[in-house]
Image 1 (tube, one colour):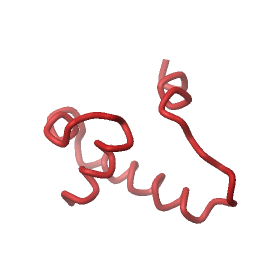
Image 2: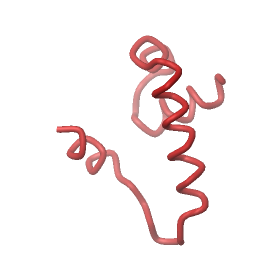
Image 3: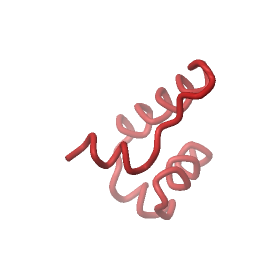
Image 4: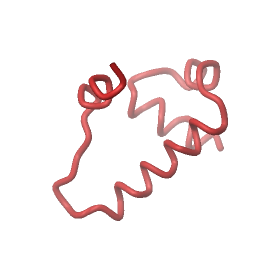
Length: 57
């Protein structure tokens, strides 16, 4: 579980403590799905932090 927290924190430029304080288990496992689905995606597909921020606004 902590490897996932560190991976999400690194991806979102947050600390692991901030991720644990602000995200529940469901959201973390959604991130797990997205990160592993990205590995199965065709090469060249890359999500940026800015794209993710814009998607949530």
